[in-house]
Image (tube, rainbow, N blue to C red):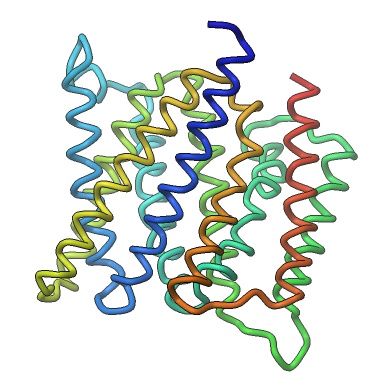
Length: 289
């Protein structure tokens, strides 16, 4: 298989991944509107943990090899951080909707670039710093601080973006000593343990129809992660990462068509600014590599 065909397949898998994750976000919003966020995320993580354990069990060295790490504290923090980020983001869906939550969350690649210096010791040149500043302007356009229509709930997806950026950087740091399989295993199991400790106190009876939605949520979560793994197996991350922004497009389509949301002009303008700055940052990173 040629490199170009690998990239085409990787792009197709990334687009499929973003669609599945957007669908997962829509289902999460539906369930979190009716039930406690912690319970919804806890059940989702139970299935996710079972999925990563099943994946590990199919490998040659089994679950024990996948769980082995020289940095258990770091891996545990990663898993806990991602689980809490999911809770924050789903809460944002219920407060702001899919469109505006994803519009603000789109700034996370810029946060990764900004934090890569203090967290990983990577050099960030003036061009990328300029892109980060431009992206921050885009966030301000969306948030509209200092005006009468400012919605303080917009800080929620911004906090989720910061947490996800930190999770991504810690994942890159962990990759210096641990394999992808090990990090994936700890992401699922540590997250499930965390959500079990929190979510069990918020258990609520669920109707039969919503259990079907919950089952679909679990399936989309596992399917999305599987597609993402396959995507990075067949193509370079730098080649397919720009297409991850399509999750914003798919999530907006679901928010508008299913939940009756709308796109305010300032949100549309802010997204254009953020995505443009993010794409430039990804391009500069690829050029340097």
